[in-house]
Image (cartoon, rainbow, N blue to C red; front, side, top):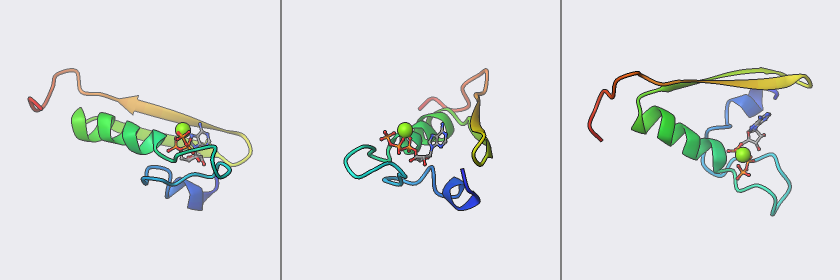
Amino acid sequence: MSESVQQQIFEHLFTTKAVGKGTGLGLAITRQIVVEKHQGAIEVNSVLGEGTEFVISLPAKALTSS
Ligand SMILES: Nc1ncnc2c1ncn2[C@@H]1O[C@H](COP(=O)(O)OP(=O)(O)OP(=O)(O)O)[C@@H](O)[C@H]1O
Ligand SMILES: [Mg+2]
C-alpha cells in the first residue's frame, strides 16, 4: 500500500476497490472490535507492491467490562 492509502484504511467507507465491489467497512469494523471493544492494537506493516501484514494484539485480561 502507498503511504497515503495506509493513512486512510481504517476510515469508514474508504476503499480502493471498484465501485460496487468493496464497502470500505472491513477494517473500520475490525478497528472498532480490536481497539475500542477490547483495548487492543492493530499494527500495519506494508511494502508497496510486495505485501501487507496486520499484527493484532489483545490484552490477556479485559480492561473494562464493556
Ligand atoms: N490485506 C491488504 N493488503 C493490502 N491492502 C489492503 C489490505 N486490506 C485492506 N487493504 C486496503 O485498505 C482498504 C480498506 O480496507 P477495508 O477492509 O476497510 O475495505 P475493503 O476491503 O475495500 O472493502 P470490504 O472489506 O467491505 O470488502 C482496501 O480498499 C485496501 O486499499
Ligand atoms: Mg476488506
